[in-house]
Image (cartoon, helix red, strand yellow):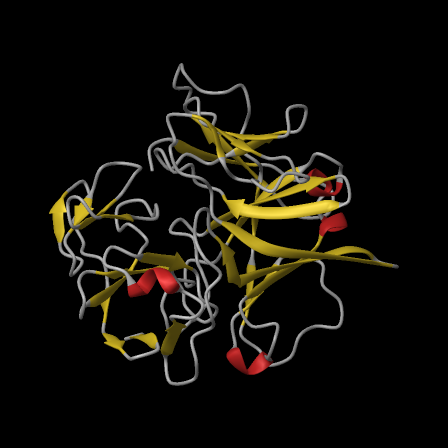
Length: 313
């Protein structure tokens, strides 16, 4: 993308790349976090010790599948309190439901260190896709291209929430666990567990590729216009499920095909709308208004007396 240029630099420990951004005149005085490439491990065995960032991409490896693991101390720009790096997944890693974990559209994840806490969010600003940086003095995630700013305070329950436009949707966030031992602090970023703003905690997709939403847990789906959205474990992208009428429930992949924002259901217009750039999609996922040109993936839905079942195809 034309807002990015890459200048190679080297740091003690991990090899990092500085992400440069062409000045836009209205951005924040912060640089994008330096880039560390992630190695893809397709083995069924995890190494005894982790240093460089590694993504485990073989489901036979067990619980480590779909996780990025790294030794924070290996990357000086991350090890320091207030530090941050951008993790770049390999080009071969793409979002598919067979893969079963969430992959950012640009394959970039921003990891931030604050005190004893580490957290991981999408690196691309929802406004125009610029690579984000972290301003530790303000505890904010900021866009160097434009004026967008996001909550970066680890003590807040709203990490990734929009603090200043033009972005008008919060950042995706992944569950991150830090374990400290004799060798330093090891991070585990679980791409199977994505946290979304204003969405629900959904059950996992089962072995038959079905997502069951009991009415007892999601009573909004018993009412016309009721909506459930979230990121189920075992699914690469979030879903949004909506009751259209007394007998019809629809479900689509809720990631906008333009730049990856999460679409919302409009009861008034009876369509899915992207709050970031204005794309709209019909109830079956077809594009009504751009800039998106590719439809949303639509999933078959069965309405039972006590639940809704979405079949992931």
